[in-house]
Length: 522
Image 1 (cartoon, rainbow, N blue to C red):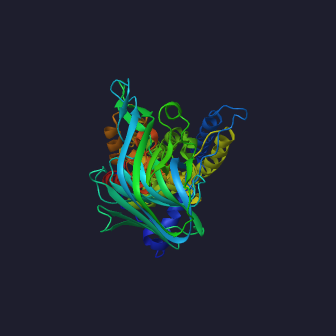
Image 2: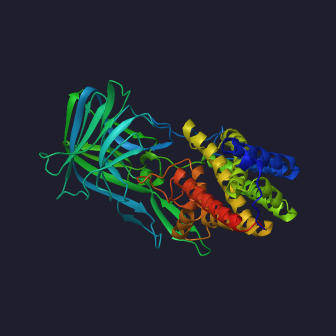
Image 3: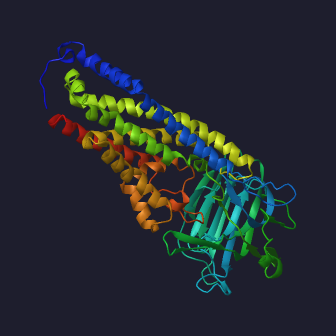
């Protein structure tokens, strides 16, 4: 049914400015006077908080020993958890200066790789690293810059764990050595590479603010594990990481600047050299003979992903989201069921504004409820996880705020999407089912080890479930050993881009609902 009745909104000269505000007040009054809707939103918030806290209290990590307390994760200069484990031959460097070396070989071993897992083989993993480094002491997590050759990624310059710049591709051998140079001038460190030691190419530059006057300069080698991933019979993937070790040979070592003469110091930073292989077969460390250094090491210098992320505390979001969807759908379908939509449209014939007002109200209420829930469960749940010995990957305050506000925005966008589906279907069960199938089901399929990784990633790019990317707190680093899949909490889109996909679906659905409402009341 359609109507052309003139209302006060259309005849009032102030309607253009005050009409929408009146609509908002009217829709807010409708929402708050229906007790079930308010209770439903409170239940959604409580579900998120209670399930999140239950997950946190149910997780306990034991590291053994007398104290049964796990050691704290090393933290890098930017506040991220890091792995800082390598073999290091070094000297002090006061003020400006640098180091130049020639790398003539990079070899290694991989323990028990597939397919048979029956022997130790020769090989170098892609991110094995051998090169020169300037570092603020030997404390794990201290600032550094390094130039290196790698197993399969050519020459790189990396600094402070998260920064990575690519040089020339290719490996290293006695027939094709690589020359590396790293210099310091104040807080600026510059890395170079050369194929002959005469013509040099800049690999990258790093500015390490606050670097002390005296640092450590020298040679290093490290080698992360050998990661293999295979498809499980029932879907998902199985990951295995095996111990590896790398050995590099350096010669033509020269130092510039204020460095004392004498023996080089040798350290296995981060406790390298403690595996059974290193004890009984090839120990990690440094051997010097006639100006040639053979350095053997294992581990990595990179951000660490070995720990729980703060989004572990958000295990209740899916359940809370389902409640939000039901409330949002009923906010519109209840009017159709009771025949009240005609009264609403008589009072405000501009139908697009009616749906817009409903969307603003349900989106705002949901955002506030989600903000309260996430703002409670994330900090409290994280403290509980740490108190129970769980290593929780640290994030910046801004990242934590983004996760909290992002979850609230995710719930709000989903509520608007569900409201629009309710206006389109005009039937509660159909709209609720459609919203759950569009948002919840793809997320479950993508993250529950049911689908191949590629399919899961496309689901999280193309469906409204892309919005869940907003909760990812640990970025994906290309130079870090790991299987970056949805099952591990890594989304294919950036956080705000994923939320934008969900928002786009909400706007599209709302637009279609407005078109249908203009053509037919009920």
